[in-house]
Image (cartoon, rainbow, N blue to C red):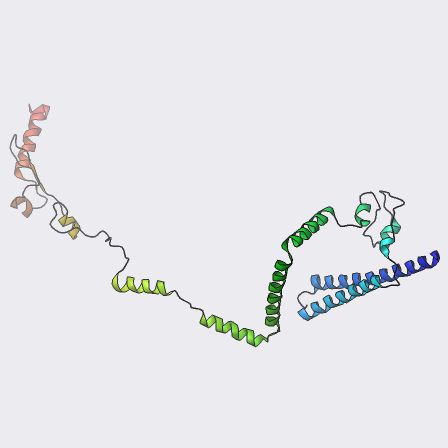
Length: 270
């Protein structure tokens, strides 16, 4: 009886190992296509790869649920030897993935439960599911089903229908803001909401000291120096006709003053 159970267990393990090898080969092929042939890869090809993987996983589940397959949960794996050194046989069996069977690796490879973090998240999800209640959960399920049904309808509709719907939406969507258009017309036509400040311009003619300069032509103020002792010249006074008629010629009064001053100051003329 015990030998028969051992043979059944060996046969189930071999069959399960073969199925897992098929899944591994399919995954390797699909990953290679995604990394190296992504430019030529089409969506139907991707769906075919997913369908292949899904079928292989379903086959493994059927094998595990078969009545003739012994329950693997009743089997316990105990490590008999742990060593930090490299094991060539183990590396060959695991395709160089597990070269060492040490105290650090064993808890991960022989784990029968999820990680503590995963267990904590699962507990939180279960507590939240219990707290929601059946009525709220049913409403959420109905909402999700509606969204999925609407998405499936859009995906199943022909592409021409979707393009026509998008074109209709684009045509009905306004491309301007009526309020902005009204404000712009009021500003251009009636000057509404425009600033009343004027830019600086020319000064009004007639202001003292600024009329001639702002009007354009440059002007010069003429100075007349009068002759005679004790008499000061008037700045800005009227210009005599002799000075205006003979430009560049020094007046006689200035010459007389210069001669008298030079004669009194030179030491040899004393």
